[in-house]
Amino acid sequence: MGNQKIEKLETPKSLKILCIMSFIGFALAMANDTYFYMSYGSIEEVKASADQTTWELLEDKLDLFEQNGGDISEDGTLRISLMYIYRSILDVLALLGVSMMFIRLKLGFIIYAVFQAAYAAIPFVMFGSAGGIIVGNASVAITLVYIGLFLTQKRHLIK
Picture 1 (cartoon, one colour):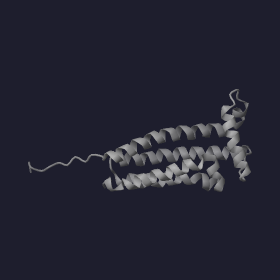
Picture 2 (cartoon, rainbow, N blue to C red):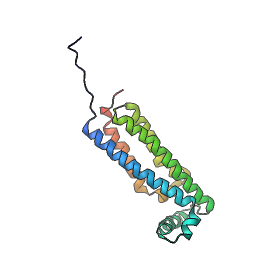
Picture 3 (cartoon, helix red, strand yellow):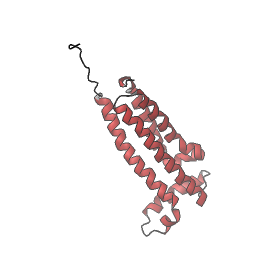
Picture 4 (tube, rainbow, N blue to C red):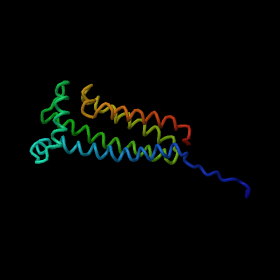
């Protein structure tokens, strides 16, 4: 009984780095999504603001969105705002998966992959191909790359 070895399960460095990068990315994504939720949800106030920087950014996206069949009426911008709050919620749930993977639980990868895939898909589900214009196709690509990167680390996960 006294000679039994207790194996300390350390998180591999590659998985730690990926999790830390994800935590940072989630913080930025949640801040970004919350900012756009509030901006699109109060578009008239943004238009009337003394600082037109935010409006110029949104106006360019909205023009491109409209050119691709998107609705930029008040209802349309509220729908865009709603998409961003959905994305923020999905971010929190995917972050739970990253936290679980940090302590090496396999269920964490499943939670992460499902909610990150939903995070990437929701603009397209809500707006068709024009959804990529609002969130940016690069953002969607980064999300999918991270799912792939975590897939390479799945072998380090237990239980």
